[in-house]
Every structure is written in structure tokens, then in C-alpha cells.
Image (cartoon, rainbow, N blue to C red; front, side):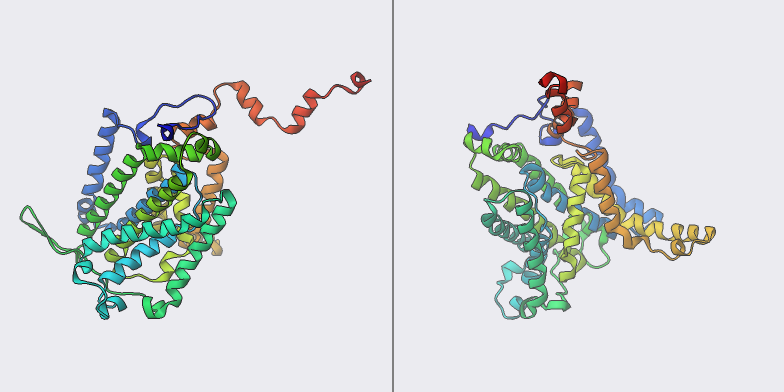
Length: 405
């Protein structure tokens, strides 16, 4: 009973909404189904119009899964994780170790045939990343804020460097290729393969993995554990005094957040048939954190929107804007703009997006109801009190110079 209590937000008490793991009302359920149908049908539209963007959307969906997983740690439990790309790498390399013919474990016969199956390796990648999430969370249980961020940042730097230097296990800078793929699926008389030219099938598979992740995460948030995460996020001391087990709650947050990153990494490695340490650098953690902040910390659907926006810019829009911007530079005679490649500015755009969000909409594009209540006081008097500086308070409370005598 105690773990169901959540520290109240300042201002109005928000009702539980669909964006926080509750039930979808009919209107929003219809909108969700419509969007889902459009996403499922996209490969046919892409083929008809000759865009050739299915492969780009595959990687976009992988980053959306990463953002949903990071939202468990940062948005639900309030634990700042700057090394999230490490679990992405762990999931990808687990898939490679178990299924690649070039893996040292497969070559030496250390992997039983049953574990070389794609679906089995996918599940094991999920559990392996979760186990490493616990290993990271255990030493950081007494840390909060900046100190926790520094430790997770260090972990995020250690893992890719280990994969670089452990040449005898990971092939170092050569990477691992090829990687196991799902067997051909026979469905309604159709044969669905997963070869290099079957991007449409890969697209649907990654989308299904994302939907499964969404279902699991929303159910977790609506559970007893999800309410404990909220209590820890709001006030650890109050949560502990009400009976919430801080150790278990934080470890579950790290483990489950890492597990979805491992999920994404394993599918990513198999879909693109190559893993290399350079794919999991610190910039990936920054990019995923930017998605969470832009969409709205704690709102799973807002995080999906933020992930789609930033990943689409990174994978599609930046490249599409490059030629028009260069032509504009040539037209106005600006050589710097004419020779500039906007695809090199992605981190600049992510940083600018974070700065603007903190200044203009600190709750994100789609903040959840609780954060909206915290950031929007109930009346004008509370707004004035919260924005008043210490100097103004002292000036009001201190007597005038003539009155002191």
C-alpha cells in the first residue's frame, strides 16, 4: 500500500491521463489507430513515390525505442543517465556475439545452436542489457543529480572504448559482420524474408518491436512500480518515509531502461548487418536525451514525437536541406553558405533545441499533466512569489531607514 503513494505536485493536483499510462479515450484512441495505420502503410507510399526512405525510417524507429527506454530512467524515475548509448552497444554486440559467423564465440563453438537463433538472441540481448543496467545502478544508489550524471557518463565512455580495445573478442576497429537475421516467415501464403533487399519487412519488424516496447512501458508506468518511480522522482526522502524501497525501485529503473536500449541495439545490429564501436559514442546519448527533453519528460507519447522530430532531422531533413541551402548561398553570393554542409550541424541543432526548450517551454512540447501542473502555478499570486528575487523580498520586509531609528 505504501508504494502507491506519490508526492503531490505543487499547484493543482493533476488527474491521471492517457499520456501517463492510463486508458486512452475514444478520440485519442482513434487518432492513435489512424497514425499507426499510416505508419504501417508508409512503405507502400514510399515505393509508389520512389522516395527510397524506408531504410532511414528504420533507424529513426530504433532511436524512438531508445528514447522510450531512456524516458523510463529520466522521465519516470528522475535519474539522469548520460551513458545510455552504452546499453545500446551492449545489446548490439550481444546479438553479434551470439549470431555472427565471424564472432569468436561462434567460431570456437562456445555458443550452442539454439542461442544462435535470432529470436532467442533478441530476448537474451534484452536480459543482458538489463543485467548491465543493474551493474551500473548498484554503485550509484547513493548518488543523485550531477554526481549520478558523471558516473553514468563515465560508464558510457568505458563501454565503447572496451569494444575498441578488446580486439580478440570484438574485432576492435574492424567491427563484426555479418550478423544473424530472422528466418523467413510464412504468413497468409506470403513469404517474408529478411535479406538486404527486404527493407520493407525489416521496417515492419522494427515497428512491431517498438509497439511491444510501448505496450510494456505504458503498463509499467501504470503499475505499482511506476507509482514508486514517480514518488522517488518527486522526493526520495518522502518516498522512503512512506515505505518505498529506494534500492529496489532505482535498480528496476536502471534495469528496465537499459533493457529497451538493448532491445533496440540487437534489432539495429541485425537490420544493418554491422556493429562498430563508433556507432555508440557519447553523441548518441546526447541525441536520445535531447529527444526526451524536446518531446516532454515523463510523457511517453511526447517522447515518441520528440524522437521522430530529431531523428527525422538527423536522418532525412538535414540531407534534404543541404542542396537548397547551398543553392541559396550561390544565388546570394555567400561562399560560406554555398559550400556549407548542414548535415555536419546536427549537434548544433540538438543543442539549440535544448536551449530553446529550456527558455520557452521547459516541460517539453507535450509535458505530462503532473509536470504541467508543477510548471504552471494555480494563480497569479503564486507566479509572482516564485519569480520574486531575494533582493525584492529583503526590500519588502526590511523597514525603511527612518523607521529603524
